[in-house]
Structure formats: structure tokens, C-alpha cells
Length: 334
Ligand SMILES: [Mg+2]
Image (cartoon, rainbow, N blue to C red):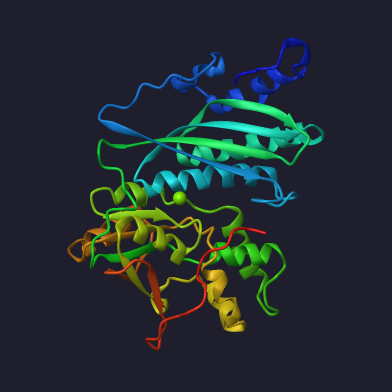
């Protein structure tokens, strides 16, 4: 943790805050050097490539001001972990920058450290360093995640071939419906249980780490769903230089999502709104069995939803065999 302010301007509790809230997150990881030095020092794992990603979140833009602060930390960790998963990487450690409003600084530090600690247990990584400052603006958090994948084996958006099958993990649409739930904007008649399921999928996504790693050497292209299943498939199409056809009927939906759509089909666009953090990937037909075997070993359900084809963008076919028109582009929050 650097403290760049001159001594006179340094908040009195700067070092106390680091000692109390951040040092426990560094634990005994030698890379972090107990946060005693000016920077972290990583000895790269033998035979591995390092994978880097960064995501930032701003209060009022990417999360609600009154979201529980530990949940904000966990979502920030998880959206970054999901990017590592989409590359086939396992997590190693992270750097964290926080700009926190002075009035709620301690509350933030307590919530964030509690959230990061909980997810470090689950995902097996630790804090390597970072910085914490005060801001007159909204709370702003940025995390840089570092992972590792076998040399030359990182998954890519650009490897899909014509005729490759398209797969998605888990269920899609819960993130988009969860945001609507969080805003109190679901149809009358949705059960409290369904609302809770959808909200928690939005607040606390599950990055598919084991699946991403299991797909190394099997998937031809991969991405994680942040913008929406069709929008993110569009990124694979763009980088792979292909089109894609997806069957709407094949999209895996949760019971909660189905319940919403049965009550009001006008909520379909929310299915494509993103924040799912599932893995969307392709593989040649000859690897179909290997895909399902990898999914079984990772303990994560996978559905086959379509096929890569000649063209330049993804298309969606409804149950009657008609092309779905209208915007399927994911939208950003708020
Ligand atoms: Mg991503």
C-alpha cells in the first residue's frame, strides 16, 4: 500500500487502516510481503502465462448506494474472477484501489475487508497491494486481478470455427431480471422466493472458475457474460470473423426467470441484459462429449444453444423457427 501524500496531509489512520483491514487480506502470501514494501514481487509459476484483468465499480453507477458493502466487494472480486475464468486461468492475487467518502470510510473498510476475506476463502487468492484514498465523490473501487494459465493455452474470443457448437454454463437472464428485482420492477405475482433468487444472482454472481480451467484445450473460443448472452456472443463473432445462430428454446433459464416470463413475456429483453457471469464458449462438434465431461468434472451444468456459421453477427431463432428481431444488445445499468 503506498501512501503518497506528504506527511502533514496524510490521514492519521492511513497506516492503522492498512494494518487493520488490508494486512489480514494479504495473509502469508509471499508475493504481498505483508504489504510492508512499496510493491509486490511475484515469482511466476513455472510453465505458466500470467493473465491480467481489471474492473472498476462506482456507487450509483455499478451498484446501489445502499447495497451491503461486503457484497459490493464480493461482486467486484467476482466480476474480475469471471474474466480470469473466461481465459481458462486460475486466480493468484489482486491489487485493490479504493476511493471512499470520508464520512463512511470506516464503514466501507470494514464491509469491504469482510467481503474480500469471505471470497478469498472460496477462490484461493489474496491481496497483493493497492492504495486507499478519500474522495468527495461517490465510492469508487478498482481491482486488478492476476491469474495463471498453462503457457500458450489461454482461451480467446477469436478461436471459434465455422460449424463449432455454442455452449453456455448455468442459466442466463437472472442477472438482468435480478437488476429489475432490485429496482422493485418485476410483474405482480412473482413469489418472494423468486425475487430473492434473482436479486442474489445480481448481487453475488458465481464465476465459473473450475469450468474455465477445465475447458482449456477443449473450447475453441470463450467469453464471460457481462453484457448479455447475445451481445457477448457478438464479441466472439467479431473477433472470430463469423456469425452465429442461437435457438431461443435452448437457452437455459432458471425456474425464477421462467416464472417471470410466464407472468409477463415482455420481460424477455431482460434475459439478454447481462450481469450473468456465466461462461459462453464454442467447441468443434467432435469435442461435444469432452465439453460435457469437463462440465461434469467441474460440477457446473452446461447447455448447447447454437452453432457458429458464416456471417458477421449472432442471430436468434424462436421456437417457431422465426428470427427474433429487435435489439438484443445488452444494456448498461441504470
Ligand atoms: Mg469479460
